Length: 196
Image (tube, rainbow, N blue to C red; front, top):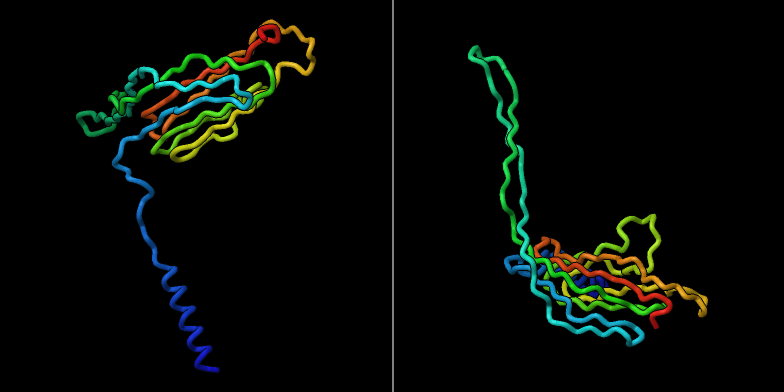
């Protein structure tokens, strides 16, 4: 019996010891450039199905700056003043893809945007300020790699006889890679009650 207990203890020690081995590999290959592409945009009622080739990007170069400080001393060695110069330099070049406005039907719906990516990405919640009510809201605000972003779209009115003649205010969504080298600008609007 003691031999069996000793054998079980030895097996447990080996399992725990092998589980403590750490593999310090990073997730993914950090030397690859970031990629992000919108593959398709569809909705839950089959009205909107937009498969497209990415539009031509607008190249944008980030201009960054830092403050360079230099102490100025008088001839007798006493401190006179601190000179501060702003030094500007160009950072990475980013690609901005602007899509045409996505016009959605007037009734309750869900919109799905399928992404293909090899990087971390973010899609901040619409609207950016939480105190404003909105008619469209995304559930997923960030991720890694391929994903589907799900948007909930509220109906125009619960009254079927409503004749609201204006479209919803355009809401803007930016989807960017974590290093901000690829950005998508999407704009959403919703049809008025009399357009359908």
